[in-house]
Image (cartoon, rainbow, N blue to C red):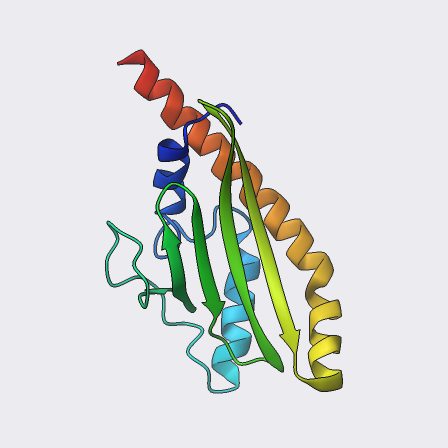
Length: 150
């Protein structure tokens, strides 16, 4: 994408709350309702600080484990599920104002049901991450164009 790491990071910093996940938020909401139905905290939206991503803070049902500004965000999955997982959003430099944005999910299944869970949701995850990454990159490029026009 044609955007600086700083402009891409500004988009990453919008995650959660009213901005949600940039693509098919209805599917994210369905998973949150599933969590809520089994006693989880999936419907607890928002962040405690919308200006800065900080280790230990929450982004909706995710807990931030690591922040490297303009480079990487690592979060732990916080909904009830047969296993544990996380999301990593990385900005890889290609040149000064060209970067690659990558969103990856990681899963550690707890036995058979953890594998069933992962493989059941895998097609949806692929679709969600494709759209999420595409829309985040588009917004970062729009930010870059607006900055260059100033």
